[in-house]
Length: 284
Image (tube, rainbow, N blue to C red; front, side, top):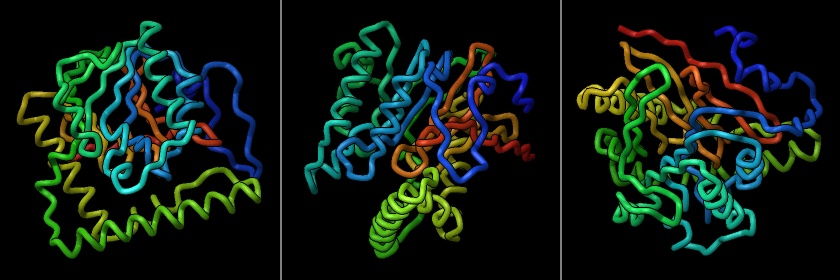
């Protein structure tokens, strides 16, 4: 993709190459048609609410999709954690919707009780179990959180327990790695994401998830799918179908953005801001 010719790309710096953290632009970053974010996990200690709040203050779009796991009810049940920034993120969603932005909330497994209110309004925010979206260039996309795909990923009880504890360890490592990087003025980097992407079992689970999400979209007559759930941002075309995963605000701090011409891209927004390289894969 020609970044220079893309109106979205022109507004942002590319990934930094220096050791120092570059200053952020002061103006709004994006004037987009639609933005998707997922897996925020408000109420969980590793939620990057400060980065997300900064992102929400810098965007302008017609529609904002919240693609599940916005509030982590599982974590809140184990240990109550609700910092001021988490509350401010919730208020920001209300503020954006009240000012005319369409905000559609598609709950996930960590905020599953909200699915009972599908088809209703939560203040000015729409709630939907799933949603259909038509891009500016006419593609019909299925919007879903994606936890239903877990049924295709076979794990024993022991592997699930080990996986949960292993993920907690990864986030612990990520938390301290981020603190050390800030001390030496290095930009945010998801060490947990790097480790996870190099674990054979995790890579196999991600591949299965992506395959089944695309198969579900195809079975139902869609041109692609936008989802979250696995904390692994991705955007590609495969066999004529579009697979888009928003990522998360625990490890990756990413959002999916569509401009008014129908071009979709992944944005990383932490203490550095840049467009992620698209995975351009064409598979038979």
